[in-house]
Image (cartoon, rainbow, N blue to C red):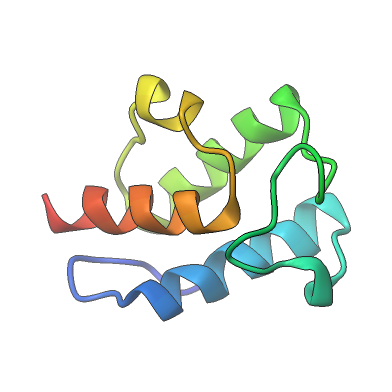
Length: 88
């Protein structure tokens, strides 16, 4: 597992997110696109979203704000939220 930090690029964040989706949620890699909707396209439910937040915290060392994460709808939104968090 690669640790993310303030130098991590959006592309590297996407790669980490893809790994989490494949390993933990059995999502097909081809389905993981920036515009893929978490609930509609990837079948990620609210419990999966909590597990995703935990996995992202483990990889980034930073806790995502639950209020920010509630606004996330697509894979691209996750990339943006994590990138913003890492830059702080």
